[in-house]
Amino acid sequence: LVLLRHGQSQWNGPQARFTGWCDIPLTVRGRVEAVAAGQLMRSRGFEAKRVCVAFASELQRSHETCELALASMAGHEQDSWNPNRIRKDWRLNERHYGAVQGFYKNDPDLKRDYGEETIRHWRRSMHGKPPKMGKMHKHYMPPPAPQTESLYDCQARVVRCWEDSIAPAMFEEEDLPYPPDERTVLVVAHANTIRSLMAYFDNVPENQVQNMYIPNSVPILYRFKTETRQPISVKLESNHGGSHARWMLGPENHMNIREALSGGGTLTRAIFEALGAGRDLTITGRDIEMGVRELMRDDLAPMDCVVMGVAKEICRNIAPDEKIHYKEFELKTQEALEDFTLKNLNPSDIVSKETAGSY
Image (cartoon, rainbow, N blue to C red):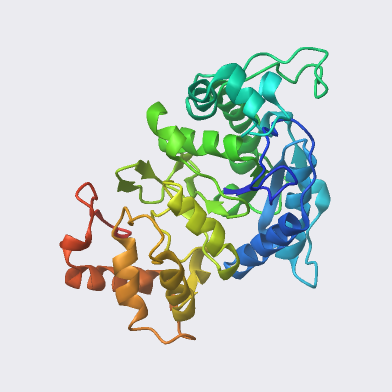
């Protein structure tokens, strides 16, 4: 399962608004991000023809990102991707922000009327919700659009979508190009709906969900065991909790990843794992070196896992154009870990030795 937040929309950025269910288009930058995300997934072995089904919300910023990413994954030959495989589902829409939907997040009138602490509670807690939207609101929509939502409400509908639509497409449906054990499903949605799915997959405690930052257009991979329908990748631990997710790192999304790290998110787990398709899983020395240089900038928050130090050690011993397979990467990780001094870790960090490697 590959999760992807839409590219930058016209209401993202420094003057961000409570977008919610407002159907706002992508910016030019957002379209470029969507294409770059598709190129990155293709380079990791996820060609469009491998995607049996793609899910998007009913909002255009999600659907357009999905189309652009898949076209990019298909490459110049546009190999065998059928756009009819994109399925829209309103339950993947962004969280509904009620009466404040459409307002700037830093609107002084909102702060005056409700107070900063109340607004922070709406945005960051699982159960806080803005006032309901009335029928006279300029962004009012009839049911099934809610009148307002907490993150808990949003997660409930997203999990229902997973259980009765996405999971069956992954594990049950017949007449798809690949059998369930080889199947790839893409979900292109929004910050809160992807956060909700990840929190569900990783059993993130409610008080930690607010620390999960989902950047635009960074592909997030979960591998599942067909029989149990549970994630099978090693769960990497940190002081923010644990995650089975693997984040795809490429030159185009380093800035988004740096923003996620500086925002206190849980992204640093397995940032240098080579992500891709089965036996073709490879990564180059240049990829690792570029990642180290970008992510070890002085203005970043301290790393919360051992991956960074190990990656630095590995890139010293790999030529820029040299490719190594995932299994070799794991061996080098274990070798580098033996020389890695634990004094470089934060006090709350955990070194985990697993059959899939050390983290």
